[in-house]
Length: 114
Image 1: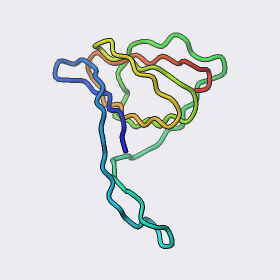
Image 2 (image 1 turned 120 degrees about the horizontal axis):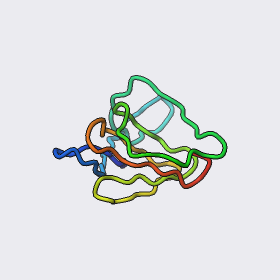
Image 3 (image 1 turned 90 degrees about the vertical axis):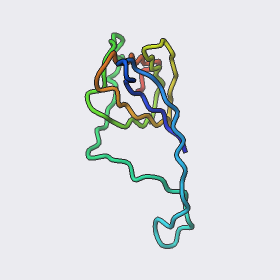
């Protein structure tokens, strides 16, 4: 299992880190064979966010408003960090945004269905 971490390094520059999480076989509920389980990961609330029809084309460089997990359900977007590295994410992507300070990142929607 893996996710992408977006964080601010010691210089305040945003960066990507690919994180590989090892699962441990565990029974999660009676009647279901063991599944690979990792975590638990800290989460206190959940927001459901949807881009309005017609999109929002003028996204600017920004920091994350809080440390937050993002699970992409529909659509595609590119995230650009301080080095200029750009990565495209779509359905099934799991991201941890931790750059609450520093230079921030740029999110660019590629589809209207984010």
